[in-house]
Image (cartoon, rainbow, N blue to C red; front, side, top):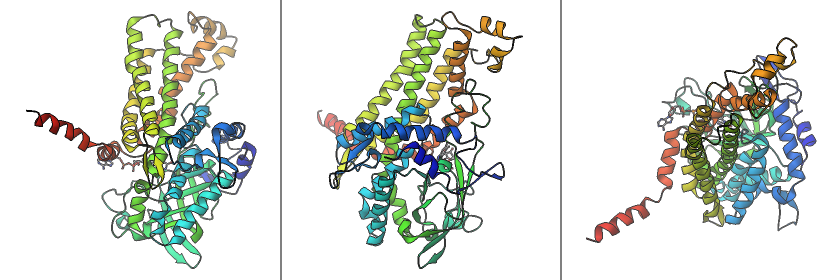
Amino acid sequence: MRGGATYVASLRDGRTVFLDGERVDDVTKHPAFVEPIRKIAETYDQAAAAPDVTTVVDPATGRHFGAMWLIPRSADDIEIRRRVHRFWAEPSYGLMGRTPDHVASVITAFASWRQLFDRAGRQFGDNIVRFWEKARAEDLYLSYAIVPPQIDRSQPAHRQPEPFLYPGAVRERDDGIVVRGCQAIATSAAMADWLFLSYITPLAPGDDDYALSLVMPMNADGLKLYPRRPFAAQATSVYDYPLSSRFDELDVTVVFEDVFVPWEQVFIYRRVDLVNAQFHETPSHTMANFQSLVRFGVKLEFLAGLAMKLVELHSNEGNAATQAHLGGEIAALCAAFEGLVHAAQRFPLVSEGVARPHPQYIYAGMSLQRRLIVDLMRAVRELAGGAFQALPSSSASFDSPETCADTERYYRSGVASARDRVKLLKLIWDMVGTEFAGRQLQYEMFYSAAQPVVNARMFRAYDWAKAKAMVDRCLGEY
Ligand SMILES: Cc1cc2nc3c(=O)[nH]c(=O)nc-3n(C[C@H](O)[C@H](O)[C@H](O)COP(=O)(O)OP(=O)(O)OC[C@H]3O[C@@H](n4cnc5c(N)ncnc54)[C@H](O)[C@@H]3O)c2cc1C
């Protein structure tokens, strides 16, 4: 597997990133990106040092490859994938959602289901399989942009205020196509190697020019990356903002200014039906969101740990009401969610020789996720009272001769020094209250789709026939 240094070097490829109106020369040196890139690089190194968890053996060649590229054939294979997702989620405590294993799941699922791409000609199926093999061999880090900007949601792509606001093929050449337009968000794009571009929002009849599914390197000519306001660059210190300063994976708006894409990198071209089918007919939606749920489970555990540490900080752990709050509002939700993840893995749907995490549990998890994150954040806040607001304005209070005595004396707790107490409270505030925390909340609410969309998927995934049969049996008894 590739190591961290190779990964970091690969980002110095002349990619076009604009921040605050200025071009970023080298993302690996810019304060907005240094820390998240360092975290990903460290995790690549840790992954290379833990091949038992992070790799599997290709039976055809006997060579090891990254387990995130494994096509699952059974529940055991999904368990291998669960372990590698957890491996990638733990370094950021579940706070970085688009680690390399997320879009790797999409590409792997596509390769497992080439028959969908073959419908437009075998060359398209060949393209997806060949790209999956390349990505697997080189351990590529992909980001994806699959939702168009919110310009006019009442109209399809081809009826937006002008053509190619949404990304589409503006021209066809003998050797490929030229793509123009904009996609709303590609999280982690500035620190990934390749971009996958398509649509998960349904395309309409007449949207043929927009019906694309393709990949391009992040330094493709004409590909421009516009990150939102970065949190790391605003953080005054790691002590004051331990999460904002280190784990901001950065959401990026992507603009395609006549980007040329060779045919070999195109998986679907001008087929509305195939673009609309690709995420759900293949196992890609369930596999990618399995990663999201495993990662979210890590975040829940982290939140539970923070809650308990907060209670212990002020010696409230023996209080019966506090224990009930911890049990009912936090532990029950965390444990139930973990059960869903295991059920999705343990009881897969197997068809055409490919096992997908069971959609019923995937969509139940996704439907609950956005509620749980709100509930958990509120539950932790309930435990804090005014603790976050009664804190020194920054770590400088400990260093100033004029303020250090008061700071050490009055900000301590019965069991912790002021430095340790303030450190923990600032960590918790960065998890539930800062701008970074707000983005975390929005991520869990929308990383995949709006709640009604997820609920509709849950509606389709649930076994209503089985439930109704029980009622019929009851009715038949009398
Ligand atoms: C932090 C973050 C990171 C993201 N990362 C990525 C990424 O890496 N790649 C990527 O491609 N996208 C990414 N996204 C985009 C994400 O996929 C979309 O935000 C999501 O699909 C919702 O689409 P939207 O933003 O267009 O909102 P909309 O779908 O326009 O939703 C806005 C409002 O409309 C309502 N609504 C929408 N649809 C319906 C409906 N069918 N019925 C009733 N009400 C509805 C919703 O309830 C909501 O209130 C990210 C989003 C966030 C917030």
